[in-house]
Length: 580
Image (cartoon, rainbow, N blue to C red; front, side):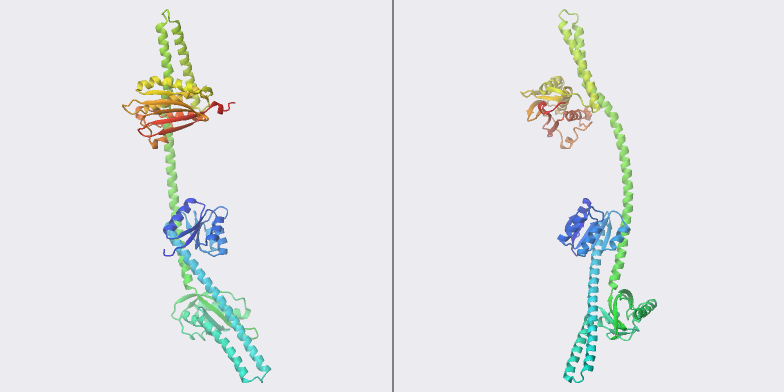
């Protein structure tokens, strides 16, 4: 497209606005304003004075048609409407008010380019026709004024002649010169205006046709004088209609109204014309004939036909797009349904797998106190017959009771955890709970070849917690650190507690393989693990995350591949927590 236009766009769909802005830029146009509702569009157009408006229809505050009408009342502009659906009523409403093209989403670049070319051309032609009509009206007014002046001059001349026969010849000569000058001006105007002007008598015979009128019909100047006006019409039917109309005008004298008809040129070609006419009256006010201004509107008619064809093509394209969208939507719905069925099957499979994984996790948690109880029982049996076994047996029985109690607590808290139930929390010293969890895990850590170092804050850190859950949290973090050890390299693990402003901090640091960036967002997901082949369940960090959330804390992971990982948990200090 050669011409570059300043275009204002409006739509409540941000994606469509972005598409229009980018596509119009690619086509060489300048987007001078972007509006998301009709009120904004009106305001922007007053400020920016664009060459063209491209707007959606359904928008908040004021729709696209209403906004376009308000803008065009102040300054006529070509308008292109965009809608998600083809709506005949909206098209008729828009056609009744202003020039436009109508595009249906999704918009193709070629359709947009064609629509801009058509609407700008049509708008320009309509403006030209409006200017021509204005010029015709002005010319007609001038002709009527000249006729009135001429008639007045004739009447004055007659009065002057009858009133004073004694006026000398020189005075009469000056009056005749004035009339001749007026007539000459009249004739010059009629011969130079670009529209056809004709005078006909009451019988329909042409008494005068200016040069433009003759050229329009393929005649030389003066050749139309004396011909009947209906001989210029294209068909017999149109000639008969004009004869009847002429007789009615002479008899009834209805108000003059413009009309369109078809004329046949001298070479036989047909042209479309618009006729603006008025009455010519004699001194008594009777109809002596008619004066008309003729405008060739053949090009406008051809443009209107081309626009109708283009609109029909656009409508056909829009309907084809709608059908394609309907098919695509049906396919999408089928894909969504298929995906939903696949996801449901996957969830069922995961639920079945999680049962086994959960059972393995519970068995792992319970195994330690069960082993401790068995060891204590075996020790008690071994020393029960010894004379000095009293204190040892008592200690073994106490260990058995503690281990059994611990198993019961594990089962109870696992059930609550599985049901998302809140567990009981009391004020405890975090250092003691963390130290107990580390001591409990040292045996397993030692078997892996790793070492663990514990640094507890010097001041007591009192928090409201469920101690068993915090032990599980620390144990799982330690297990995760052990499993992160690089092959053939003994792992080093450091556990710290510290007071940080209003929170107590637990950090577990390892020098293992680290976590890749794309894995960090998934490490707290249930059943997510990078060690499935090595027996990882993917539950450890998920359980840690749940415990932290249940205690109103936060968890942070800092890690680099091959450089280790530090996981930090922060829990509110007891003095900053209100307990009911």
